[in-house]
Image (cartoon, rainbow, N blue to C red; front, side):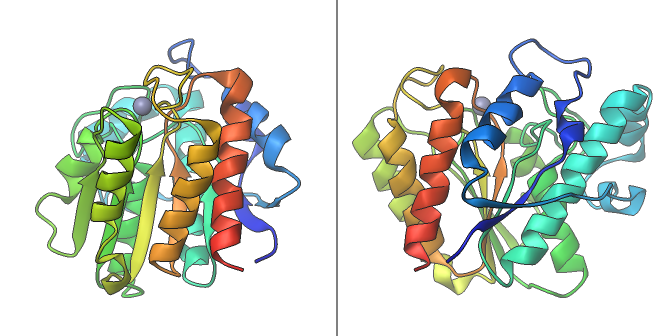
Length: 251
Ligand SMILES: [Zn+2]
C-alpha cells in the first residue's frame, strides 16, 4: 500500500492540563518521524451523541468543565472515528492525544478522558457498518476503561496483551489474532510503553514492525489508535516501524 491515512491535528500539540509525561512532544515527535509514510488528514470534533455511545452524561460534563481538554479530547475521538471509517477501505492510524483506554463508562484516569477506540467501534456498530469487532490492546497498561465499556456488548471482543517476556508477548498476540479474520474490523489500542527504554522495558523497535505486520495481516479492515508511549527519543522510530510493518503486510 501507499502512504497510511493518518488522522492528526496541530491541536494535539495543545499543552492542556494533564501529567507531565503525557505531553505534546509525544505526538510532535511521532509526526516528525512518520510524515514520509503518512497521508495526514485533519480530524473533526466528535459530537456529544458520539460521547454518549460510551460515557455517562456526568462524566462528559466533568471533562467539559476544562474547556481546553474538552476540545482536544473531542478532536481525538473524532480522529479515532474517522480512522475506523477509513479502515473499512484500507488500514489507517490515529495519531492522537489524549489517549483513551483508561476511560470507562463513568470514570476516567491514566491520562485518558474519553475512550477513543471504544467510541469509534460503537459508532460503526450503531451505523450498521459492522456487526462484530475485535479490539486488541498492546499497551503496557491494561485497558480497563475499554473493558468496562465493552464487557456486556456481545458484538465486541476485547483482548489485552499482558506479557512479561518478548516470546510471551508474541505468543499472546498470535493467540489474540487467531480468529481475527472472522470479525468485521480489528482495532488496536497501540501503546508503545512496552518499549525496552520505556516503562515496560520489553520490546525493541524492530518488534513493533513485526507487531504491525501481524495485526494488519489478521484482517484487511484494521486500524490503530495511539495510546501510551513515553520514551520520547525513540517514540517516533517505534511508531514508524509499526506503520512500516502495516505497509509491508498490505503489499
Ligand atoms: Zn500505557
